[in-house]
Length: 284
Image 1: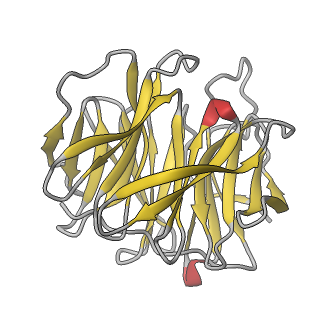
Image 2 (image 1 turned 90 degrees about the vertical axis):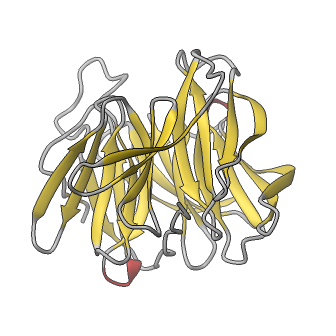
């Protein structure tokens, strides 16, 4: 049975990550600029506040977290020490950072989104471990969910308003993507695809914003295997964690709801019969 695990609700909870060494769950409240940390077994909860919005976090090989906030990428420690790693020059003020994750060699792949959520002014970028930043996609409206297959030969990617999940051939050594294909068109589904993760069998789990569910999808044939119902419409992202990576953690949001229901904006947990994959650490 799905249970609430966050002590409070938030306007835009997103980006859950399970830290494999600390054995804790992190997530963010994007517009509030807060990072949340919960040791579920010990029931110890902590918040870290940044000066600007925070759109994505990832564990770092140097300890602490990497966070995308404002126009920059930062290193953040548990005691709240924030250090700038990289700032984007010639920032397009029509956009903000959105979802991001690190690949198996520690590069940080991060997208932007149009602030009005309706114009293709945004893009998809990669920050290499040598701090070289380059754009890999343009004409994006809301860059969102990311996942790599186990072999690191495919990158799955979501541009939310298209209602499609795409795949790219992924070159891990060179950090390049090409040959975009449509994995599945979700236009017939209620809601729009948001955050995404991949399980140990190579299947995708996709949060449906406005759809009150998480879809379980086989990317090899585009079939929807199953789905999980979530007791609030705006499901934002998902991540496997806990013992054996068999618990699916699900973030939700209150934004865009005129009268948010009592279940909106919490983090949920659901035991599954499958297991997830370990998160990649950033190489900064």
